Image (cartoon, rainbow over all chains, first blue to last red; front, side):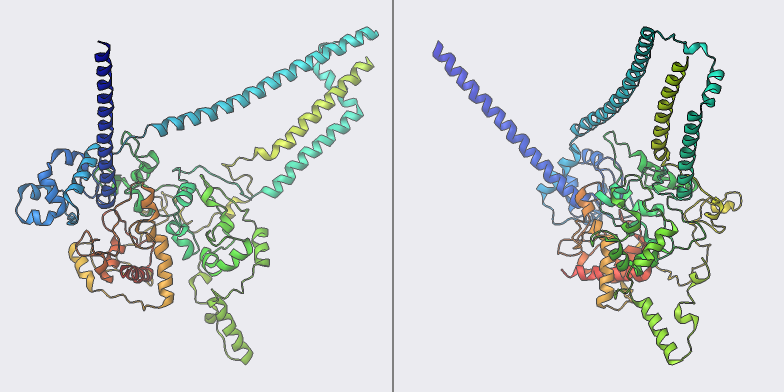
Length: 429
Length: 205
């Protein structure tokens, strides 16, 4: 009897192990299929298709569930041939949009099946990330509350100690035989008047007044019109840290004007849409990130239908951070293009960093943009006194001046036009 | 009586001194990051002419829709503007095949093309033109960018990517295609042709 039960146990154990192993292998194989499908989807399909919403092509998850493989495989391989062959389903499918679907003759049946499998299942959900994030947030607010609590307790302790000192002082005085006059007995006005009769106190009061007013005045004079650190709230929480830092988008990509004109230009929304037509940072419930939705709203763009409604357009009112007074002329391209080498050398900008950092600071670490440099006249002039502009790389401008100088030496005629006098900006700015 | 007054004075003086020190220490912290702080003669900051990227008076010029950034009035071209005549249609795209790159191929134009390519195209198309730019690698929604070279990389409008003529590349830069937007606002015609010249170098891989 005992033997039988032992054998039974063993068989049961091995069967269990076998079953669990085969289950693991099966799910592993499926996961591998899904992973392959995912890479293939990202590589071949994702340029035009999304899983849960229409893009250039229709949303794939519902389509893959709706249609069967017998149609999907030849359609994906060569949809044009399938339409030409008169397949009714194919002709129906081609009506989705006037733009034709690309053909994929090199994909094998197995690969297409793995893509279909992936499209049906969808993106694996990541719940871990969110919980850790909320935890971190909880900790930070908790620590803030702790600090405030400590400060409050400290104040209470200080007040209590002050009272204790008062009581003790009074006790000592009473022991020494000095009669104690209660503070409360003296009316406030009388007390203040008595205080101002004390010369020492008056002198001290005047000193305090001078220091306070003086420091206010000093700082007022130094900081009037100097906006260093100015960090206004922008209509969209655009993070330079994310775009220029983590995503490594070059400054020039958005601020094209800085390399061509006086103004560095805030990018128009079509520049945002170059990426954000596809990058929507959707949450798990399929909601587009509210900040990206603001771009769409300003454009009257419907992300689901992919259409623009001109009548709903309304400009986004970005708040200007760097505001040079109108009486000072500053040209971005002159500094960024012509003076690039000189500025790099003067301000010690690394070769891999953009020259913009010289004045705008480490923009790639600013979650919210702020003014890094004072933009005062002294700040401009200090650089103009020291910078070495004898670099050879961008010497077209200086070559002109040298040419004119040679002419002067020879006594020939020179005109303002030779020195850039025909540039529009010489008069019109 | 006398003792109590002097005691009171001493205490008041200490209190006053502490209050004053704290005020002086806190003064710089008072500065609000959200405000520009004290300004003298603010009207000297604001230009009388249009202020770039800033709102305009909606009542003064209703047609401006409150914006300063405006497109040119209809049927006008800015000085030196090179209008691209072919329409954004299938026919226009096919017709663009015959357009020739007007820039002469020199080391300098290629270098400029390379720089512009790196800034505007490589985030998606990859530094080598393999369709694996760093934004694609980040996997945030942009993917499936075709490579410029190879026997398998086809254009969604037909033909191999490596055989695409200069005119069609230019056409695509002007109008964009599928997920790619138009780069006409970021690149001038000359710059676009420099990029085209560099892309054609990448096709030869």
